[in-house]
Image (cartoon, rainbow, N blue to C red):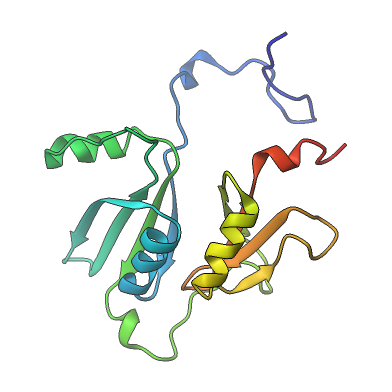
Amino acid sequence: MSFDTETEPGVCQTPNPASSGFVLNHSMLRVKDPERALDFYTRVMGMRLLRKLDFPEMKFSLYFLHRPKDGESPPGEVGERTAWTFSQRSILELTHNWGTETDPDFKYHDGNAQPQGFGHICFSVPDLDAAVRWFDENQVTYVKRPDQGKMKDVAFIKDADGYWIEIVEPARLKQLGR
């Protein structure tokens, strides 16, 4: 039997055809220093930078990162790659407001300190133990290791700006919430 949606108060059982084809394309995080953020997301998390867009009149830049599937290759031509970028799922947009990288007192709210709001993004990994070893080798800061707390087999790490990233191995989560 195929699955469509769980039923909870507020869940629309049959989406309106007007929303057909809607795709969650990207989430945006503001970053203080793009060089540090790009190093973390490309070197540690294995993402690729698809596009950088500068807006000099408003003094900010956007960086669109993606983790392509094996064998997947985005278009080389810049216009086609831009359109392709905005048609994908699971894009991370990093927004850099120029000048923040040189202000030693500047810091973005991570959403987990009070007042809470935004919580985290999540990466699924094929092998949680191997990922933890990789994060340890790269001195990544942990909020919670997989063996800590009440929820086992789930890690939380921090990126260069202190945003939380949940790390999960899907095969280990089959009993979650049961």
